[in-house]
Amino acid sequence: MKSAFKISGISKSLYEFQLGPLNLELEPGSVMGYIGPNGSGKTTTMHCMVGLIKPDEGEVKIFGNKNDPNKTDWKLDIGYVGDKHVFYENWTGQKNLEFLRQFYPDWDNQFTNELIKRFEIPIEKKAKELSTGNRVKLSLIGALAHRPKLLILDEPTAGLDPVVRTELLDILFEVVEDGERSIFYSTHILSDISRIADELTFLKNGQIMLTTPKENLTENWRRISFKYSETKTDFVNTELIENERNSYKIISNSFDTTLSELIKLGAENITETRMSIDEIAVQILKRK
Image 1 (tube, helix red, strand yellow):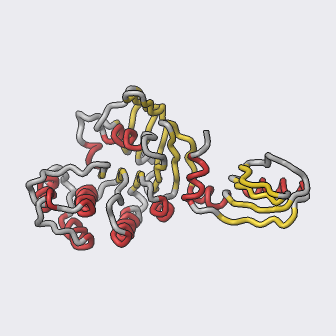
Image 2 (spheres, rainbow, N blue to C red; image 1 turned 90 degrees about the vertical axis):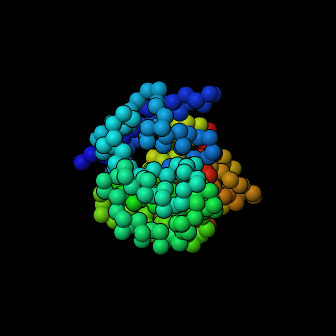
Image 3 (cartoon, rainbow, N blue to C red; image 1 turned 45 degrees about the horizontal axis):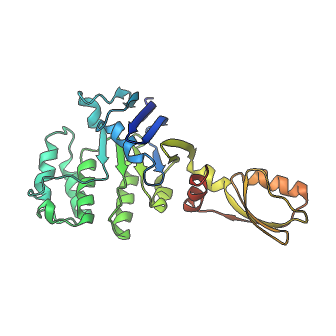
């Protein structure tokens, strides 16, 4: 089975910033969350994927087809919502969608109308008159209407209120239900990613720090408190948060391993607390 996308050794230099080299792959039917601070290279990665910029080295394949900007077939397989929402500003939202429709043979008019109703977007307003949230909605409709096999979403919920964000996530669940469609999703709202992602990739300073199934993080990471009679500054797979009068508080990225060590050491009153994706992401991204 061909990957939804395969990034092989791409790199890009922009001013003083260096992205990559990156190697990344997503299987059909999967959702990958792309997590990193501002300036880490998430948008540059996506621009390389959709052909907006050309990487200095490496290649990107979409369902086995190289993303050659001079060819069109591979573009029909993707829906892209970027960090900027570009329209013909004096056209209505409806006219902007009608313009897009001519480029996609598989454009689904019925699905488009359903999305317009679900998002409650004032489709007859000119684009320049739409609020930030409605501009995001219009971009999403344009990306979803031809039912692409791969959605590439760069901060898609920015500017949306919690109710509309929930509606969007419901739609994204529907997109991947058939097991053939995939989503590559970048956002700072990690509670969204924790709902729909199968895998998480962490990016910092243009380099991938970690790619892992989401469940591995939520199962393995813990906050642990315990008492230990001796002074110790390092435990297996942990970060020491606090030690006051031999009452320790640590964070472990491998709970079973750390627990075994604590038991062998004779630690007492061991308690553990699960961590949220937000909390885990902070710990991963602050590593040097």
